[in-house]
Length: 242
Image 1 (tube, rainbow, N blue to C red):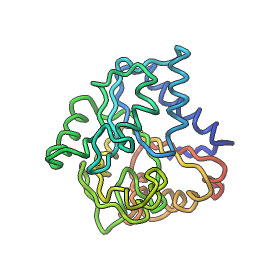
Image 2 (cartoon, rainbow, N blue to C red):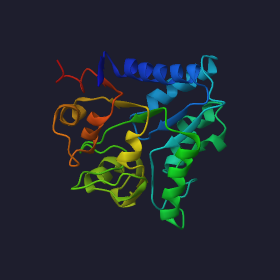
Image 3 (cartoon, rainbow, N blue to C red):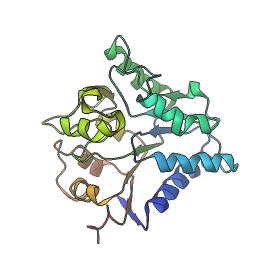
Image 4 (cartoon, rainbow, N blue to C red):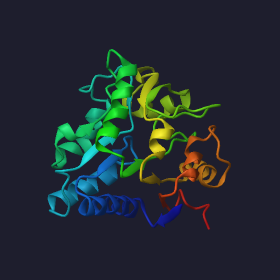
């Protein structure tokens, strides 16, 4: 693992965006594995700015997102499709037909999970997978447990995860109880993984994930098994690392 401690969140965002842009400059048709939530917003802002300045193009790239809430239509304001449109897709030149976010409102979720896997096979493998990390060590929506599902699947969300995301919905009762998520096996098939975390509240779980035992009780710890992981942390999240 390549662990980098950046001076500030803004430095972290700029560094992560530069890594993604550099990949696209060397491989314009790259497939990007994208994440949602508060962690990548600054990264996407930097990428949109780089596009506006003519420093990078997404015209030939493909993207596939990690997850989506079950029961939210793509046009729902809190869906991850809406998130991606708002924070990245509408600001760059990627064809919408080249983007894939799971459809959490699909009538047949089993078929939707299979279609997500097939999209990765058709245009992948994922060249770079962007990840955040949950307070309980989840990546994507792969929650801690006695076992993990490898492929894209439907997962029941832990109450702590729902509580953490309630700020986006205004009320925990409005947060869906299930999500479609890439499995850890699918995540680990990416050629490179970039895990981003900031804030003192993430320091302990990052330490556990990177230095503790590899266990399904901390899904992010399975990243220790991947040959090419870049970890970007700010000073607060990386304060434990010497």
